[in-house]
Amino acid sequence: MITKINELISALMNGDSALALDIGTYLLKVIVMFIIGGILIYLAIKKDYEPALLLPIGFGAIMCNIPLTSIVVNEAGERGVFGFLYDTTIANELFPVLIFIAVGAMIDFTPLFQTPLMLFFGAAAQFGIFATMLVALCFGFSLAEAGAIGVIGAADGPTTIYVANAFKLKELIGPLTVAAYSYMSLVPIIQPPVIKLLTTKEERKIRMTFHQRKLSKTAKILFPILVTIVAGFVAPESVALIGALMFGNLLRECGVLNRLSETASNILSNLVTLLLGITIGTTMTAEAFLNWKTLLIMLMGLVAFIFDTAGGVLFAKFINLFRKEKINPMVGAAGISAFPMSARVIQKLAKEEDPMNFVLMQAVAANVSGQLGSVVAGSMILVLVGKLIGL
Image 1 (cartoon, helix red, strand yellow):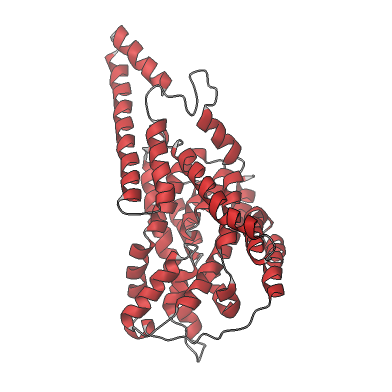
Image 2 (spheres, one colour; image 1 turned 90 degrees about the vertical axis):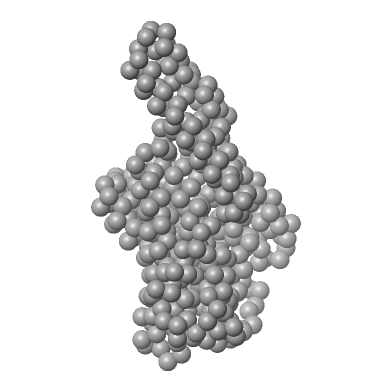
């Protein structure tokens, strides 16, 4: 930014109108970025769309586009405070891992223990990741870019950031993050039309029985340990994220580290979310954000969420062909990682069709399995695409 301003001043002094016009166009883009930042702040405050992230992202976008600022890099090429923060917290995957510890401390996997069948919906709903990858490739994105864009469909912001950073796509982290968290906040708007399009009224009225099982403390403690081991063997690249998620859950379930569990789920979560949002916002410079790739990423993010929702619903309908006790197909849509928002959406739709229909526990079970599925799917992208591109 500082260099651009100096070039403009020099061009005006030397009478170079062409260069002055070029720099003027750039300053117009800066104004556009101010507007975009303002829109994100408006959505966070007025519409309550993921305010913990969209507000700091929007403010960071405004800061990094202020002329003559050196918060990211100065004229000598030295890293500013937010450039340093990016290098030490996002470029080395620290923040995504810390967020997963916090998320793990918040999640109760008990509904999944009660209805283990829902684990399959956490896998089926990741269909959107791979379908969106193919669509992105058709639009001319590279394989690495397509892989990172596809992960938006997991409705899992930290995993999206983790994969994009692993593929060294710094210029896309801003658009990817904005798309991921924007569409996560729009789950109540995106999912219902897709679900209604793919199901009949009778299917949405299907009631599911819930059998309460007594769970031992030992089972709850062993679960995060065993999941980490199994996921590590299936997808070794997932150990950092799945391990962090399960470690947070172990803090919650062990019963002897309540203070650490509360710290992880509250203080750590809030602090990391705050710094993550504003740091990512400062990557949204006019040069990096205002291009055709950003528009396509936003479009692909919507495609990913639609495919993920459809994949879960269609998988449930397929299973129903072989089951006497039918599954409400809407539950399949809760297999994304937007927890607990998606489960609430499913319960609301079920009550609209039948006020006495309660599928919340099954939807929550599918929703928490989506947390696991998104990490494993993202790790598979890292392994498969990484090998193809030589990382």
